[in-house]
Length: 107
Image (tube, rainbow, N blue to C red; front, side, top):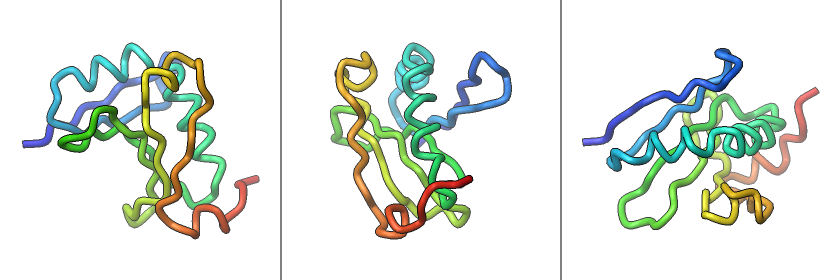
């Protein structure tokens, strides 16, 4: 059964939702919340992005930060590898929908 939890950022306004079976996933997000928030903000520059959340897929080594539109369609994702969350490498955005790239940046 998938568990759902929420990590609140220091400003008490922004939240990162966490979906996954691993009990340690919420702790991972809490420990890396500043970097994850920075990536979430980057993804949210597209006016199509309605939400972004962290999800652990079964069999995957690293969790993903997934950006979705208002209907819940997956637009893009970033693999949260050790290099990315330690800020030693720039995040690589994987496009799951061409609309994400074509949408442009929100004003």
